[in-house]
Length: 194
Image (cartoon, rainbow, N blue to C red; front, side):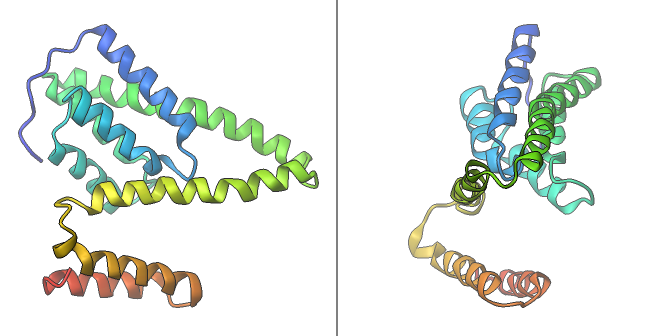
């Protein structure tokens, strides 16, 4: 991990962080990772509460660790708290971000799932399910562009994007296990080809 920043956060900053994550929770269709572009804008670009490296490391560590991928939110809160200067602030950061991201979406999901199950034969329920697929795909694509396009040089990045599109088509059109594609990506990355 990188060295922490030295932030001065007051209670209004913590409340603002909590409200931001409450809002993001309602946008996290397709999983919390789909809102990472907005988290980046808020934490790194707007408030400078995290560095780009801390942001990327939070996602990478949480994705590599066993358990739910929402753990990157806890790591971001932890890093904001460490940047504010204490272990107590780090724990407060975890609490603020995790309660903020989980409370609305969990409540809404529970209520909507109960209603949707009772009314699964209604045309509007079926239409909603089909209409959400493009939204989820667009949010995940924005995340992949943010995390994958670190240097934004099309002349240099084309093998990475070609590999990404090829892997997507292979996953969509074949029954090849995903681990084989991950292994191929690791080999190509290790050889410096992507």
